[in-house]
Length: 93
Image (cartoon, rainbow, N blue to C red; front, top):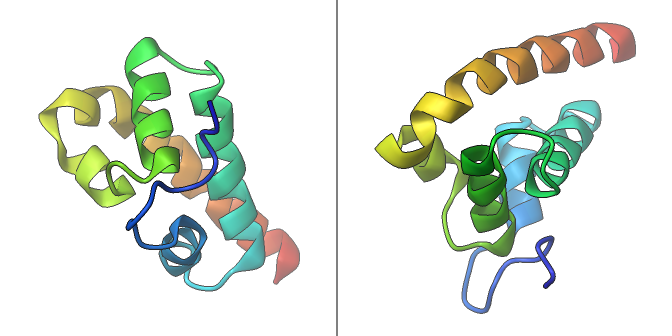
């Protein structure tokens, strides 16, 4: 199963992730690789499912973060991700 490309008729995932990263290449790479690691099982089963759904284009990252099904599992990781993005920006900046 290919979990890295969106399904048919779904807005381009990479474009959406670049928007979330505000055009910052380091932040985009970190976000993309984080989703891929989660999809491969680096987190809980809920996070793995969420990442697979996002990478497949079945749900947006925003909707996944706001949904009751994934939000509780995702919030602690989101804090870690934001810190890592800030660190990456400082290194590149």
